[in-house]
Length: 610
Image (cartoon, rainbow, N blue to C red):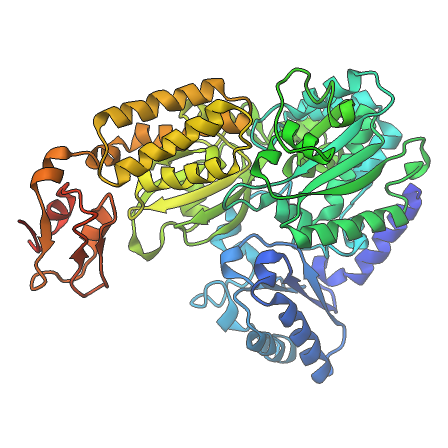
């Protein structure tokens, strides 16, 4: 393919999808989110209903397309009608009929499905608070692109970065642009991407490889999955650019088998890219050749670690090895290898098109560009967000996420995946950068961000993530295999009311030992949930071992005085108080540790010591 052919395809497709970008278009286009979250809420059925109703009403110049993720997963399925850009959410099949009847036939907004039904004048995505502070680079264009149509990607200047790299830049100039951008790996470690590419490029070898880590396995994380589902060609283009920069002719995407939709769309995208000559032999008439294959992983969390991933890709058991040698020196099949995650690659086309200097001006300090987070937990607006590095946790949780639902108070945010840390309320104004998080005992991780409210027991939270770590440890090194199991035993002992102050001391000592002596990044960061909750919520651990109260004090709820406000249940560190709102609650005496928190918080004197 030549540049002229690429531009011709772009212009032709832009005329076909005129309504998406031209507010004066006489056409209309209905874009329905078709990523996993919305598909699970029957967005495919919506497309069928829209098409049927359009045909039934004999409407002309109206098309229906499925698109990538809009991010506001909590309110899916999401539908946008262009050229107006009217943003509809929680659309049902009956709602689709209503939108056709009201919006397309009568020319009115179907207010029942607006984001805020009390403000019918606010109809576009720009009116939705969730989007106002976001900035899209890695996820740019997701809501405009049919992920199964390469021409949609080309229409938004797809593959122009690859053309620019191959025809106007040398491999070393491509690497310099990436270095200038300051882009750091978005998979967790935050290693400078340009430096990684440069080290691989310097190696002399007959064969080199480019690998994409799409093995995203953190609980609550779905950033990489969504990017592939929404915009698979962006990853293909970026990996080809990386191949050109380092001298690699073969790429592999290591994708979780639990991501079937992402796999299907990526496979179709690879076929289409080959069909148009955008990967394969002599790309854009140059001497550069690059092929791409998908390798499906079996779901082992440890295979997110780069050396374990490469072992698995080779058909070996997925477990890490010592370094050096580093992958840049000896990676897949013993050859020099560049390995980055999906989000890292998703930034590359924009960096090449706009320049590394442009990218470096976004963000804060050494944390340049944007970061994609999967926002979940006790927050009103769960979903995917992308915003400049340096934004605060408060902006993420309250401005974008909408705060804590049901009038509850914020307690903590768990950031960085299962090996991340829990940060308390007084850290809400902390800028989200690699350095600021590290200084406070946390880490960026791949981007999982789980919000916890006042009802959460932080000891239980630590236990939850440690159980995950124990299940997912490959077992190769003793500190991780045995040490984390011992941490879990101590947590269970404390939660059962059988712990002591010595157990808390052992938790801390053992956690640091595991961090310092484990083989890979998984083991080295695995005690973070324990250490961070000990640092910021130590009182909850101590409440579990108050022997004096445990041995001497028992508490019961006077049912005549209890109004069922649930304050005592929320204050209980071991969650032994249960009941229904506005009905008397009850204390499980077998679980009660006699700490007295319930009595202290009860405003109605309904809790009595016996």
